[in-house]
Length: 576
Ligand SMILES: [Zn+2]
Image (cartoon, rainbow, N blue to C red; front, side, top):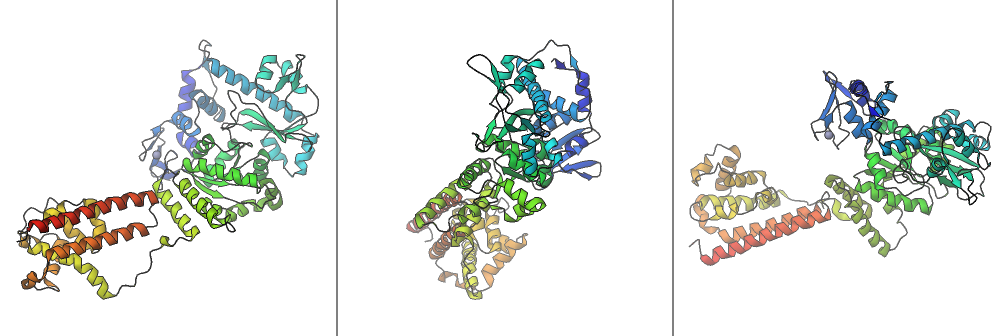
């Protein structure tokens, strides 16, 4: 293998970008450009544009942009070389390489493994017709289309059939054993790794066979599945079985169904649930989550109904939460697996999944019905820990809301307070009263300084009356230069003018100011603010507990300081 020729790169980068990107995500034409929600960051309104005339894409949300090649590299997480070969394959462009002088040992080995796997796949699929494997998969109801699409194959019980074939095809003893297809015996003879099994080739995201998953044909045989041992191109913790066939459907449906086994994937696919991938019997990993995130944020976990399946579900949730995914669980009856369900329900399988899937928190809590209080507390703590794994604050808040609701914690909804008109007026009055005092004592007391010292971010929470809030924002703004009463009464800002007039005129008589004690007004205002802020924060269902704690502490400090300042004012007898 040499270096890809400049002409090939040129041809690839001039493939119509709308065709390429449109094959991954849904593009909407708007005038001369195409728009979509950006596949590289999480967004609700489309800021990702594709310009067909100049063959580039750009996201105004996250800044990602480039040409056909950079899009596919990023989207499929491929190397430059793999991107070019994939696009050449897909768009029928001849791949030309310059010379042979720049050989890369890694790429060479990768190619060798892919080649040996390709030949092996051909061998196994050739052996399938009329074999025991064929009979078994037909009994399981798999269609011929799916059998050929997934390149399902067969190996007999013969000892070194594949070995002989591969040697015949020019592979060396070292290669056949190193890449896991054959094993070596003490007497230096070779035998096939997979015997008497149904073969499921494992395709990577661009459709190359990177390994094999082999299911036993005789029920007494152990283990049930054997996978290819790991090598340069096959990492069990990274590959998702069926991704190559599912990715288009995952993008379309904006949802991926995750199952455990290869047979589950194929069976679901055959029964119309084509957005399915499988973890090949390993625990769900961070890499799996990262891979899926390229196609969707929404995951439905569909694992076996037994305890092992349940445990695997919890583990998968952790990884998916860390990756910022939205998780749903579709619980299955204890004795069922996805393959059973698909075979039973046929084309109703998808409907079953969609109507039975539930948010992971609801699922977790639903399992708790008969548990005692200690288990409940344990789970409550555990779920809070899990919720906090999610990197997005808004999602965490939403998860917390579900959590509160499912546990029956009452603080999700504000307790209904039945205010009478009078009470509301009384509540607001203290704010008006405060404004009145400020206005009257504008030049006599440093009350404005006192409010200047409060963090402006707290104003919105301190005042119930929106116009009072505007007033305090005004006295803190640069517009407020002189402190003359007329500046407020005739203010150009309607809200400031109105609230000033209201405070001064409505229920009070300006001549009677003396009857108001400034300190006690301020003091009761502070206490009221303290109370209101506390309730507001505690009752806010969208705040996570950490956030609540932080805001509460901050508020409390400020209020305490204010009260200290007030008593200092009193001691210094500023008003005298
Ligand atoms: Zn973006």
